Image: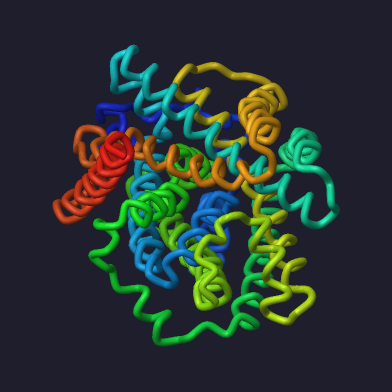
Length: 446
């Protein structure tokens, strides 16, 4: 049996048309007969777009709150969440490359229309929560750097639609290059912050060991689940399964196997970078605020105000805010792409990119403006953390279908999950479900 006939015999036939992000589908060539490193470079890019979601402004809020309140203890949550993310993004890569479908298309094709519709609504809620974090983070950064009122900053964030559209027209590699540049900027900023904050090494290392207090302290659990929601993000699973298909790899078993290998290396390296950024944010909060018994520093604005005087370095606050602005703008790109993929995949509805972007952004701008008007600047930080908890609550509705599809031999053929991968994947999905259930029950009882 030839490779083409084999794939046509699967439960899902590999589609030649109707791919999400059709304008960039298979648009990046992968040269044959080149070295390992050059091939890795050809596949590099999608992983960093995914990694952006793991260092967005929502992460900042939860990491700062966790570091100031509980010291280095929640480093273990960041580490475990990152391992979960690496596994789930690997499954997203496999689904997209092996079947030629992204997760949204796979859900539409597998489930009944009512179930598929519900999953679409939940995915849109996740996109809105994610975009809300980007809006608030960018507005806060503009306020801290240029003293622009938060309300005006929220409105200004609508203008990034034009920037994104310009880059999309130039080509997908331009988007990837911009994302990578902004990631390097964030790394440089937080490398500086960690260096001047001088954390205690041994307490820091102990923070990577999980503690039983996590399940006894409701406030700690709330922030921990916020970190989980900010780290393993549902929209990234939809995004990654689509953008790995921008590479023009061979549609054969060997070609797809090679594409999965290099795409997995790309995403794993990118998520390691994201882990260090997340850990750095929490480490700075713990070493600067927790050690000085400032346990209630949960607002990004408060962190900005206190960093320079506490550290005795005048530019510490500026560097912090500049990294926040880079983070917010970076996340805008991936949020837009994920929203487009979800709408096209679930509904087969293609909208002009600027309409889709504007719709998503307005859904985030409206609650942000409402909170600022009703509760002032102090309510924004709480809304930022809440957005990450909402993301975490949506996560199971993306994770379980992903694990189910990639564990189905009829759909995946030779790329089906091994027993070990399947078992670990369902364990991760179960842990996420249990933690979210625990949070809901405790919140309702409280």
